[in-house]
View (cartoon, one colour):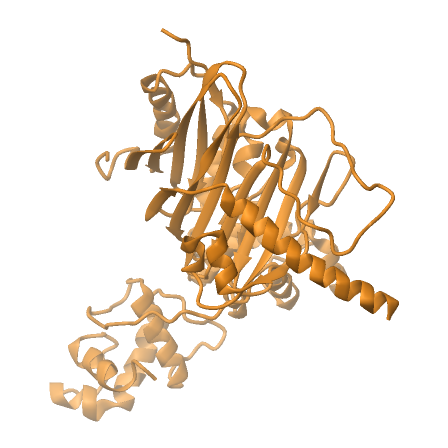
Length: 481
């Protein structure tokens, strides 16, 4: 019986190199061309504002029979996992370089002129896809999950190594951000260099996401490696402010180019079907020690930061802010993202402001963070976001609403009450939580339209209860305005 070894690799196999070599040191050509290292971690990340596809490649190099286990954390359960082709990477590089060459010529011309739901983990997917043996796990309990990893490795005949504390803390970071789905991919090698087809992961997400932190917290974190990520969206892709270049590591944000629908189809039909028009494509690369990576790629829609956020408020926007703060490593509480703006959020926001004091505090003449979500903080977050069109979900108004309830229908109701001029707190926006402010505003709204809402019930004063009569009125008159 052949002996198998368990290499605890995270996200993708990475060729470890003792040092870096540089070409063309004496010349800088703008814009730079795009290179593809088949021995690096390569990914294509396409996000349309609602759904994301990641194509993740694996290049296995081994001089003996071995088994590699890769782990990929995701913010939602993948709706589809299929086998892809490395040709997608070759094609995206080919098209990008043609476009960059055209830009370069323009520039030079310008220059010249399955477990039970309450269990610690839930197995949501198991399937062999080509050379990949894929299992998707939803994590409900950290300690249970860490124990399960050992059982999983033993079941696959792998030699398990002790899970480092850095990995445990990293998984805790993911869970606080509500990233609870982890993909386990077992790949066997046959004692020879072998390229394996990438996997295509499709899942729902309200922000653009790629897991980088998971590489830094693994046992390969002490090594140098290279990661290339091709980011695709419908709008301009900002240069996310990761650590700047130094002797040990650097980031390269590449040159952004535009792809047509036909060019996207040449890369892969799956990604082309995500979009209805042309897209922007930018290559983001990291070179250096993997343990210097301290956060994931997370970009929210530009509009998330348009609303007023304050102490005592609830809402998805606050939860998004909290996830950013957790990802930035300034969140020290054991509590995760809750959507409530309380003292923990205020104190952590102050640390975030101090971390980026040059952009947020110094223009205001401040040295210490305030924890106040003001214009400078809002504008800084907008610069790190992607401008996408807001997707309005159809509200069916099919349930009663009352104090203490939450949901998209509550939020939609609040937006209507604000537009109708019956909302008494202009400093607080639609949060999705039905509290006393919503009840009072709804009471005024019912009295505003009492002939249609109250009189059929024999009432003169509003109740603040969102029942059948008010629901029917909205469906007929205001829901689509």
